[in-house]
Length: 205
Image (tube, rainbow, N blue to C red; front, side):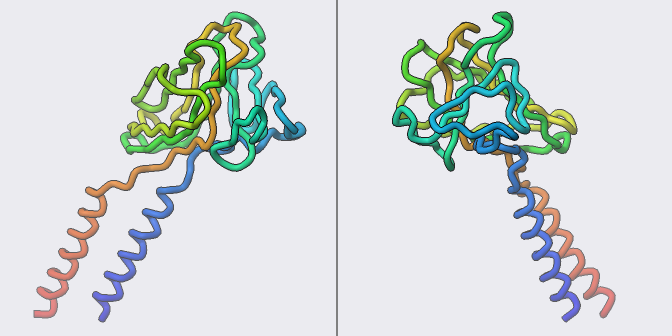
């Protein structure tokens, strides 16, 4: 009976750890928080928004403005908007805690605003960087990347690859990063459970 209780307890711990691993490590990933500023009734640009660093002002759009519906909740972000110093690319980034060598999954939705060329962008996080130029206008595309953390503090960044004076650009919404459950870790735990049972039987024999 004691062994059974230990098994149940260990499996419960495994389930709890797996659930905890699915927590979103990105804050304000749906861009619903603009801090002390007023949320837009259609759209508005902001020098900064909570949890994100930016090199230029960004626009926050309300769902339904110009018939663009948010992928998640009520608002979404446009990356290329209102260039300031004329010398740096439009970019947003966020730092988050990670475990060196652990595997994570990045998910986000993106589409390009109508007009204004290719509106390509770069996404970078951990050991992964990708340039995206084939996205579409009028519907959201879901992007998924698996990456390995290279340090205890990782950075997710989205950078426009368009001309720095381009005032139209990429829409982003529903950004999330979760730790990927490791099958090997679960296998090791099950191996430990078997070893526990075998050791107990030997002790009782």
